[in-house]
Figure (spheres, one colour):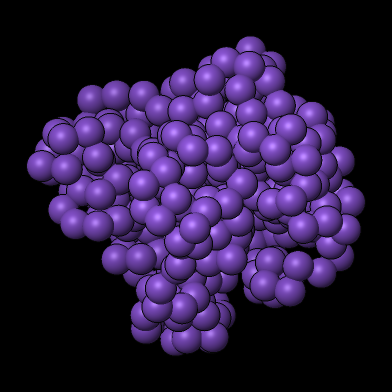
Length: 350
């Protein structure tokens, strides 16, 4: 089969690989639609170290080709979504309510990390009954692809932020995850949602997804502007959706004492992130910093697919570009350079 791989840091391309085989609890999928994520770009640039001949990608939906003998919920021909994070559900971490960390930090992140990812003609899914969900008939493949990571991660950012109904929240960066964090904050009942972003198209989408005001960091110091917009109180919660130490510092400074900083950004560079000492109340301002990796699992996917089915969320305006599978290298290039107003590229495998 053909697969798009990382050949080393900074090197990608197509190669031929053997088709994967399903174990008793596993499934093999034939992808139909997929999305390229900025985290794939971080991986190619060495954020998680050297990888050789590793198939990239973690956001796909597709058709079941084969299931193992122990799989009960799926059969060949089913149209399914598979989570970007595919935990080992029998692990201690999963039983302690941290499945994304199964068998070690970030251990549920298998695709394009510790096993071949999803940008191939066939994809192996571990623990298929727990890590896949049927796509409702009224939901398109493009819509469903957003549940696998962007919706799940962005909504997690809002869930972890502990936003009181009617409360205030600042979402730093309005890429796909930040936009879904903005929508998640609206669904959580936030009364004031401040979207920190400078790109006009992303600002427009932020307002579409529920932002009540835009904080353009090219025109204002974002922390000062957030304090102005909150009568110098600061926000109840700040969501870091970029993966930048500087942005995390701004989140801490923008959040009121007793508030929550929810980090969903992928910090792919540097050895450390820093916390502003005084804005942190020299360690005693009761500001919680909460982190998380995209929640996976059948139940999570079902709930997100229900939001699509009922028309509560439409993620497809984030799709700015479409590519055939054999054009995926160009999609990666644009995600790296952020040229041509790209937000999210859709890959068509068929």
